[in-house]
Image (cartoon, rainbow, N blue to C red; front, side, top):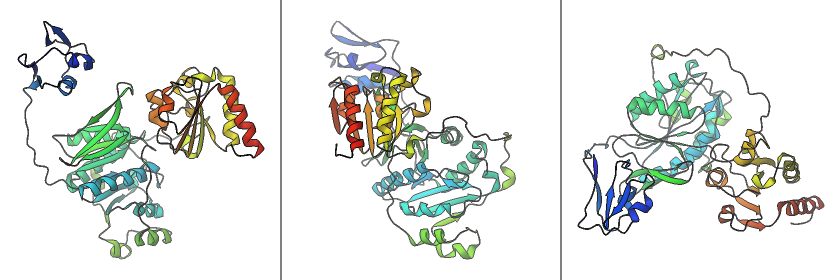
Length: 418
């Protein structure tokens, strides 16, 4: 593989050099010259208005993917309880399936799932594949990956989605490696190129400074993971099967119960003896210390570098308490040891989607925005009128937070409208 510049059309305009992040392009005697620093990222090709740059030597493949159809979502559960990210992905999967005019499938593995599967059918799912067995009790990725690979090879989904949770981040890369397909991790947006019917998978890269859109050109399924609370849960319908399952206090596998819904639910066949694992679970211990879960709150008041120190978080907490919310923080505040990590919002912290997000003294680095920009209402308080946070805020207050926040607290406690 090599990259070439057609000097008969190159004008030496420098557009290619300006977008190159690797100092791989020089302008010599009015022509672009590419040196050994090139990593073949292709940014210069997109930037060149004269189509003077091309990468050659890439093998062209024409794979037949006609056997692959549908969108399949891995529905994560713990102790029989469906994780919220499963519902979020079903909502997004339904949108993608509608664009592609195909079906939405779910795959659920676990033990003693009981009636918790009922809510799944509120999200427009066409078929649910279930494996309910004690071997799936402890959520071992080594065991789960074997059945997911079997399911993908059998049902051949065109798109496969999972949550970028601690479990999903270990499980799905293993699945992708076994079936030899690509996996785009930690996506913040999914869409369809309707001309080519290809999944466009967008995620932050280069430390969150840019957004990259990735496609899986030569393999199937197209796999992606999405961080919890990036997508919105959107139930589409209350279905008869959902109500039937919810009213049945203990789901049983007898065929007579599922006969009426056999076109919607399928228990997967598998040989238990083939699910040996090299892992042995010795024990499970719940995390001690702070167990705050930011995603449980409708109001989050976050402090950043502008707070000035750990003692000033008491002011942030007072405002959060007055609103019935919880305290969040930027990475800068956490790295400075002003507040503990469970409060961190952002790319390396929690992704949240509250009804109200108040950012106090937070400039709005893209890494922080990635964790809170889907909030319903964003209120920014910052003394810098050019702070990036104001670009996405619904309401912005330019001023000293140590003057503004106490006045807000006083107004709220007085019971008057703000």
